[in-house]
Image (cartoon, rainbow, N blue to C red; front, top):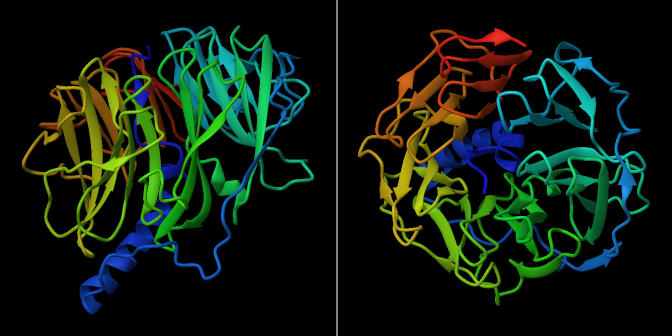
Length: 405
């Protein structure tokens, strides 16, 4: 089981700039026009999503990557990182736009750990530990521009196996925005966007699941089908699961109520789960992260042209119910949040400033007086953390001071 997780990453951060600009504009328009909640995907003649799987029998490939000429022992300063996930103070994974990397010296040097015979484009990942990892990416040279591949390794990148799917979509590059999500080495899910986006005010998605570690995947839910209970309306920010049965789908719409759906059958069917309502704001929920039965879930609040803020919701009963960690939202709007347990988390706001909480989001402390332009965080304990900014950064005092790796 993972002991830490970046909560507000992947698809949300990928289109966050345009999303919040659109949210702000829509909030102003809704306030001015008194518009009702947006439903549907906003596109006339939207095609029905179809799925065809290929490559269901995986082929192992050797470690390394032809996509990016990263060689053994490449210093961090020479790499343009997209994502980093440290597992210990010395060992960790990272992504570029076309490569999978590993380090064993705290991030100073990196080596290729990706598949040699398969190129990857704009990957997102779930790094469970130093042996098990899953990568979702588009296929840059595929004759089908909408082909998506999921690769897995069970031996730290020495060998990779792949599975691919073709999903009808209007934008293949934005389709893989949410990483695979695994609760153990066998049970995992991935949510793929098939149509819509911020401009449309809604997104259709398909959810795939695996019970054999990613060797095979099955389509289990589709927002264009009324059978799943998951609506097509609203922008989707991702999914997460507490165990093999209980999971949450998050996002936002213009109803001014937090958007949250729950499943108790492994993602096949979903029901709306109520949250304590906030003031008249746009609410963007983010997939919760669990530590046993304790969980935390950030919600972004956009206040009709008055900026934004972040509210933390917490649960101590496995997500059966959620309460606000504080009656007052944080004074900042988080673009990324990273938690190592139900009490300790760090957040970077939209201006790149860093905050920390040690009480589950009840209160936040501003750690830096100036921005280091951080976009991603990875902590392994309450002292040691890494951040992606203009360079790879490292802290040994919980985020108070940082130095270049």
